[in-house]
Amino acid sequence: MLILLSPISILLAKPFSDKHLSKLYYEHGIWLFKPIGWTTYRILSLILPSYALGLQFYLIEGALALHGLDAAALTFLAIETAAVSFSCIHALLSGLSRNPSQYIGKYTRALKLIMPAILACLLTAAILESHQLFILAG
Image (cartoon, rainbow, N blue to C red):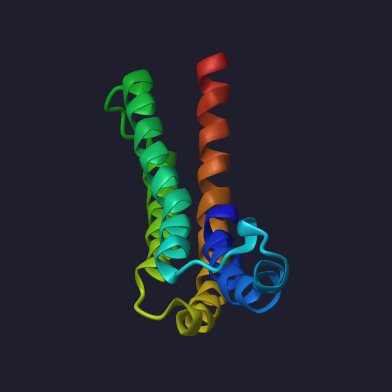
């Protein structure tokens, strides 16, 4: 959820800061609120999804080292990888758009459509993973 919602809050911060916080810069000269361009906000919106995608593949390596190539033990991994990868790639698209302020509406509508499927996949993966952990512990 954090990965999918982060581009919305980051990219909506630009119009808010330009409208409200830049007054502090122009009226009082507070450099902390100096307006900055879209490039900075785009880069900020790409950091969390990119990091999460990298972390997911790091965790896949750990699971493969623990279980080997046992297909039954790694069923949860395929479902989880698909859901997390799709979420991260979807979140990356907003930062790569040409006009992020107009893309946020499309992103939010698409998010409402895909969120139930992503959550169902992650719940299924969590159940399968906990089952696998019980088998290893027992």
